[in-house]
Amino acid sequence: MRRIETRFAELARARRAALVTFVMAGDPDLETSLAILKALPAAGADVIELGMPFTDPMADGPAIQAAGLRALHAGTTLAKTLALAADFRAHDRTTPLVLMGYYNPIYVHGVRQFLAEAKKAGVDGVIVVDLPPEEDSELCIPAREAGLAFIRLATPTTDAARLPAVLAHTSGFLYYVSITGITGAGAPDVAKVTAAVARLKQHTDLPVAVGFGVKNAASAAAIASIADGVVVGSALVEAIRKSLDEAGRPTPGSVAAVTGLVRELAAGVHAAARGFARTGQSA
Image (cartoon, rainbow, N blue to C red; front, top):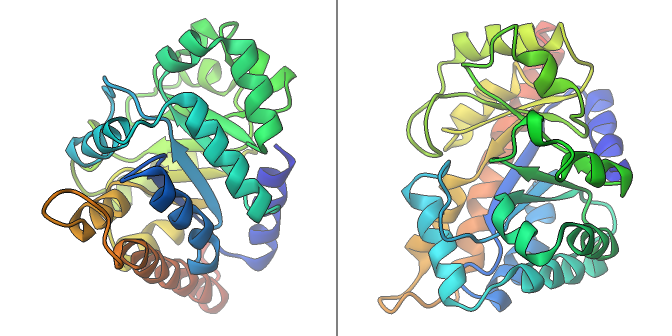
């Protein structure tokens, strides 16, 4: 959890937003997945979300669903995802790493075992999209007791009556879903997101990272000018898909396809920081 807090504090002092990148563990295979993970920080990723493949990812659109299926077909399990995280952490001691996915694989693995292994692997936090606040005793509170951040999602439909429950045990950062629907389904309305972030900031001191629908440097810059973090996932897993050969296998350009896009996104985020310095607008 400390790595997450430290990274957002560093970026706040630098007066810029974090670039939060999502990739699926084991996509398109474990070896290439690890190579991509290791390359992300140097390309400009400030925080990494690592997807835990699951057969029924109800909040995800076609791109991330396909990434999960590729990973499952490559033999990726939760145990192998945790091993992947440990391999990354042995290479990188400072970049925050968050596991993101659904509760079923964690439940089957065993909550206490999962938390102990995640902590040992150097994971900093978890995002579990299908556990509401009413079920905090299942994973959220045990995760925090184990020293892992439990990062909650807020959405355009999270109203004033619901928000206190969403924020009650959230830690690390708050993930604001900029559109109503599944990942990759549309583009965020910057004016609406601006108002939503301002409202959330009235109720929490946590950094607010905005995701869903950010696809390129321009959209990353727009969100970076109003939020503490910009989350990009579907565009990155699509870059992986497009780099594969006709048999769905990685090519020599697969890692570069992801890191090239991350560099473009990072340039947009950094441009928003330069705009902050010129205009005084909050990043």
